[in-house]
Image 1 (tube, rainbow, N blue to C red):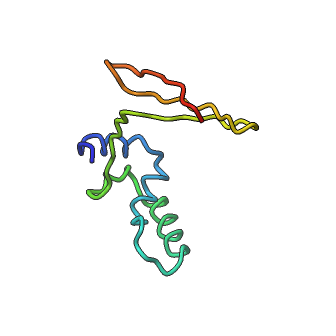
Image 2: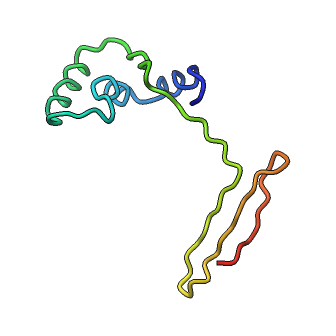
Length: 98
């Protein structure tokens, strides 16, 4: 999990509609139907005078990969595979056999 300040910064950068949606819908919780959430969202959009604060359980992840592999599909199945390894502040590319 990234630091709290990053989560708050990213939340503040979201569109107001996305911030409000986060307020009315707790991701992953069981619900009876979407209409109740839509009604709550519409009501909140009408009465909310300021942007909501970042919910305490809303977070951010900081991903720092050490390796990344990308490939491009080829009709002859000799796909182009490229491996990038983080090294000395940059990325070292390597072509891999398919």
